[in-house]
Each structure stands twice: as structure tokens, then as C-alpha cells.
Length: 230
Ligand code: SF4
Image (tube, rainbow, N blue to C red; front, side, top):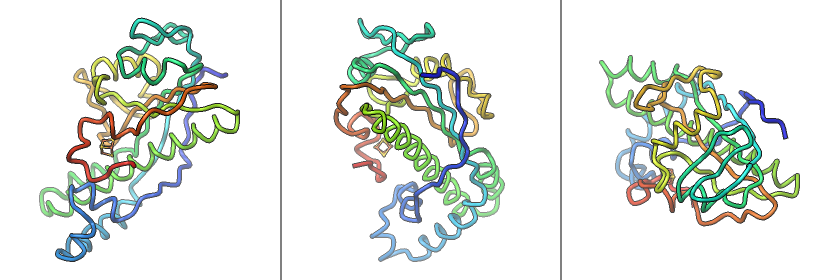
């Protein structure tokens, strides 16, 4: 399997105004019944924001060399560590490491609007959150479909910040494998990504790597998040 990075930009994102409402920590059904103007604002932000989204995914697929002692070593000498990693990737033959971003046009528009129209700026920001969520789901689905076509299985997608795989060391490990600047993402010393609407994930691929649970089971936001992936 090739170990060089690939970049893909032709993504169709599947999300709607309900996702934008959920990204503002609101319940679409309740908002529709009691705050129609909130729905109108979210619809306007979605219509405007769709023109400002520039989805791009950087991926790298690497064979697993060894998996033991809380650590998965990859064929290029890099490694991934922690109990979440070994629980889900222990049986993987390969891992796919990905960085998804929607670019910075939408974020810049939201910042510009925040001086004069904070509600609209917040709705635009929510469009960005829903969009990058949809992008990472589409990229993960693509990896799963490719694996299925090859008669293989995939693990849950894991992201730095999930329980038992902290942002540090998780992001440092991810960026030792892929170079975010290949798609214009800049990482600060505190591991914050710019554009902000960017996410990283890794997926294990193997002949016998059953998916365990759901992504949200391992997310620290699961008790408050309205955008749960069932
Ligand atoms: S609970 Fe699930 S949908 Fe919500 S932020 Fe976490 S992983 Fe995403």
C-alpha cells in the first residue's frame, strides 16, 4: 500500500439546516416550534456559508509494524500511543491518518460579521462546524468503502481529544505522520489548528478488526452534544 500522502478536494458534504441548529447547541424541533427566526437566520447562514466552504482532505496510509505495550508502531518509524489506540488499532494491518479542513473563507466572514451582527456570525460559525463534521464523516466513509471493497474491515475513527487519547500527544503523533501545511493548515505551539474548522482522525484497517462501540462513546462532549453520531 502506498505510504505517500494524497489530497482530495471533490467532496459532497451531506448536512442541512438542522445540523447547523444543532451546532449552536439547540434542538431543531423545539426551535422550529418556538423560534422561527432562529431557523431563518440559520438557513440564511447556510445559504451564504456554502459558497465559502473549500473542503480538502489530506490522507496518508501506512502499514503497522508492531502493536504492543500501549503503542502502535508504524512502518515509517512513527508511533501512536495510549489505551484508546491499542484498544481499537491493536489488530490493524494499516492505519489511515487524515486531516480534514474547510479552509478559512467562512471563518474570516464570521469574524468580519461579529462586529455588527453577532447572531449571524454565530450561525456562520455553526455552518463551519457542521461542514467539517460532514467532511470528516465523508472521508471516513470513503476509507470504509475502500476497505470493504478489498475485503477488509475498519476501526472506529479516532481523534486526538477523545477519552484516553489526549490532544497532546495525539496531535503531535498525527503531525509526525502527515504535514498539515500541505493543505494550508497551520498548527500553533499549543496544537491549535488554523483554520479552526479542521479535524484530524485515524482509522485502522485490517482483516479482523471489529468496530467497537460508537465514536460518541469515547467523546468527552457526549453528555451535552446535540449532534450525536448514533
Ligand atoms: S458526542 Fe459525538 S457528535 Fe458530539 S462532538 Fe463528540 S463525537 Fe462529535
